[in-house]
Image 1: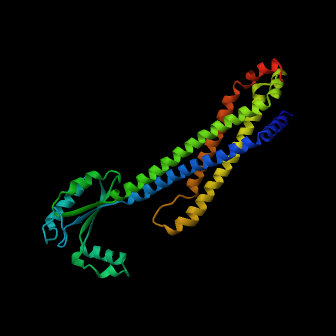
Image 2: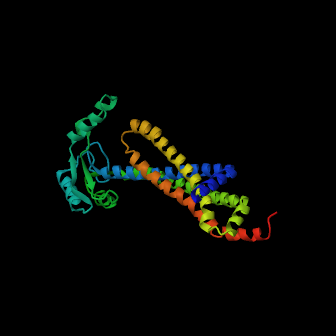
Image 3: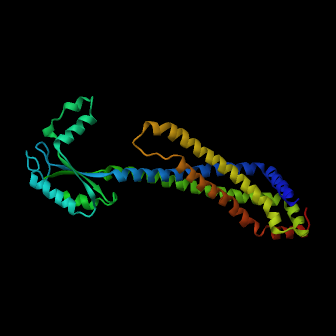
Length: 314
């Protein structure tokens, strides 16, 4: 009997405040969708960092006859003694991974050049002798690369040290800015959702102050009075959460799985596993948003409505 009454009161509250309920649902939908997008963006950045940073190598290009550099002798290749010194320096560096040093000869560099530009007009623009020998170095921790770079950049025979962090770090910084911007926008909308839920509850209780006052006078408990309002807020939040999750799923499916994943294959893209984790975060935040203002606003609700009732309603 009590359960039926609670459901009846919940439906009545939702109908009487239909406009505000729809506003709460829409705000929750948009804010939680942005929040979920921020979670997905964070996972995408972490996934790309994990895949790319693990594959990052430091390339140490040696002097060749046609190259110029502060540590190069004009018109001469790097000598065997210079190569040995560079290798000893790398092997002594604790940041270099075990078996992480690979020496690429001119012939190997030329074969890679031919493979990369097969069918291109520039395929025959260089000869084997014009190619540069190089050391390819893998690191124990891809984030700690400065020590290796600084240890070899001034050695004789080194023409250039190429570190992919110089190319990737600005890209990841831009992604992080986008990620934090999305998080900030979603945080503002989540705050608006919490305020709107609280405002909806206050309007609902004010509209039904007579009933609440009567229920209080006949001995109804705070919990019995509060539950219909709590359920109304939770139902509105769950509808918003459901719409946000569907929006996230549609975005991932159409934009990533059916879109960029097929055309941009060199990037590790998020999938359903990451989407499920983001959805879990959205559900938790949505429920907390629904319950927190409702619980806070109802702590003093019945007592606050007794005074006006005892003095008579007009």
